[in-house]
Length: 355
Image 1: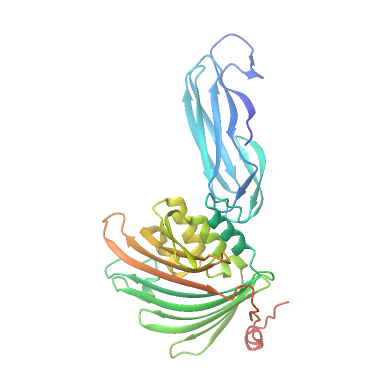
Image 2: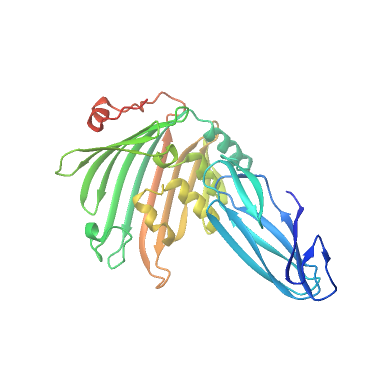
């Protein structure tokens, strides 16, 4: 953490420079000091900046403190009497690693955002985090069941689902990851409100290749630019960043964590890891009221072997239950050979071939 004086400014009355005024008349002069600031932060963590503002003038006044990250600008104002001080707190979440520039009350600072830098108080979670973050390959099997009850306004396209109809999604998928090359392939069967389609996806060299077979319709093949994080069905290392374990039990071969995401930050971290932004369910995550489940960890390898969660969706205005989400993940094939190559028939259909 750094603590340093940022600036001294005269806001009203006579002009003040470096703490000295041109006469002894009424002045409103403020001094700001960084109370809490870090040059390094992990992704999906709360990055906190605290600034103390002191009125060093002889007249009451209001001072706006500004905090800018990229295109996001925020401001908080403090009204202080002479010799009075108070602290302003800003919070931000970085979603990708890299070096970022933040402006704290007009002074620019560099912040290094690091990947998977979560430090756990629990040594088992810490060792699991390290093991999962350093995998070369992984195979994931996922089963999801999603229901939105009738008479609920849907974030989905009304022309597709019809307002007031019950929305049901049943999906099974298998995804292979090759982390060293940032490639993955997925195959899934999705049934949405009675209509079934098979979907295959491959990610390579900044593109997602998709081959879909809607029920009773021709095969659809497409390609679009993307990122590896967007292509991932879930993010196993980041799942741990959202754990707020209330209890842990042991079996002969497993550690089993029971999780209850009553904490909003933990809930956001876990949802972001389990539900990609492009996912069908992502439009409903703001309605999650309860979120409970279990995470299973192998005692010997410290790898996550299974995740089971159940969520209830609640309408904030009426407090009525509007739906449920059930998700089961099974992990296997750690560091084993996987086939993530894009089939020639797919590249030929879209006219683009990975490098």
